[in-house]
Structure formats: C-alpha cells, structure tokens
Image 1 (cartoon, rainbow, N blue to C red):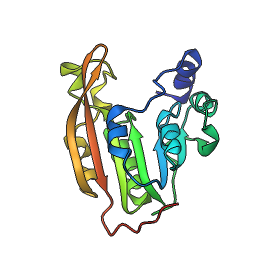
Image 2: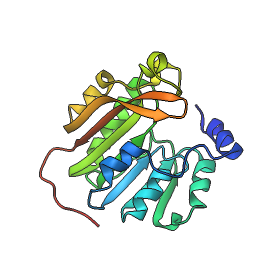
Image 3: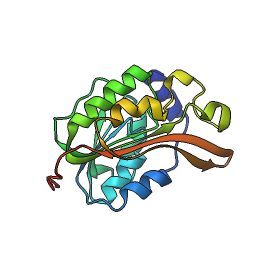
Length: 199
C-alpha cells in the first residue's frame, strides 16, 4: 500500500490497540533497555511501550498521519518520530540493541533486503524481532492481508535467520476476537559478544 492509503486509514480512526502485541511484550519485557528502532511503527504503540521501559526508541513509518497519532500520546516526547519509507531508511551500522519489525508486509525480496540491512544496524549481541502474518493464515487462520506474496513464513525468513544466532523461528498462533490467526516469528541475536553497550 502507498503512504497515502495508510494516511487515509489512520485519519479515519485508530487502527490498533494502544497495548503492545502480547508476544512482543513477553519477549522484550525482561531485556535491559538500550537503543531501538521500531520499523513501520504506525501509531507507535510498540515504540511508546518500549520508551516507557527506558529504551531510546526511533519510530519510523511512511504515514505521517499515523505518527501524528503516536505523537499525541502520553510519553511521546521520549520517542524520536521519523516519517520515512522503511525500505530506504538507514540507521548507523552497529548502533542499535533492538530492531523491531511488527506486521510489516512487503514482497519477499524487499523484506529480505530490509531485514538484512537491519541485522547490520545491530551491535554484537543486539536483537532482531520480526513478527507478522504467516502465509498459511490465508487458508488456516483469520484476518490479515490476503495477498500471499507479501506474507511471512519460516522458509521466507530463513535467509535472514542465517545471519543470526536464532532463538525462535516458527509459526505461532495468536488469539483474536474472530478466532485464531497464524503469524511467523523470528527472534535472534547478531553474532558476537554482547558489548553491553546500553544508553
């Protein structure tokens, strides 16, 4: 979708809960705070949540309308808000402790290219967390995009996983009011000793 399409959606109404995704919260809540980027942050729910835990967070999204919603929330002054296309935005190499990519769906080649760059932004020991709709969700789950070429799978994320010390790469179930949705999770570290570089 184009930025203009998402601008229209965000202008119409709030799209997401203010709470973080439960699995993302489970994985991140115990980590020591550091420097993070939330790619395709939308209204910034994860960026705001992380900043509340003491993280220094940059929220990047191509919809300025979505980010305006985030900037209006309590604690928004602790987040750096950047309107940019995540496929062309760059962070400094080895400058981050966490890259979060939640429900960003692009064609497979673009996804692989973006996530490969994102691994390079991590400090040794820094973590990449990718969570999104699994391609099998179309036939065996509920909700989400219905275009199979932009959805995740364990196989599609395997080239990026090969760059990491992987803790989890799997299909996961998510309960929704409409039923069970199927997502793909990639959770791993950039290899090398954890430098302990925290803000």
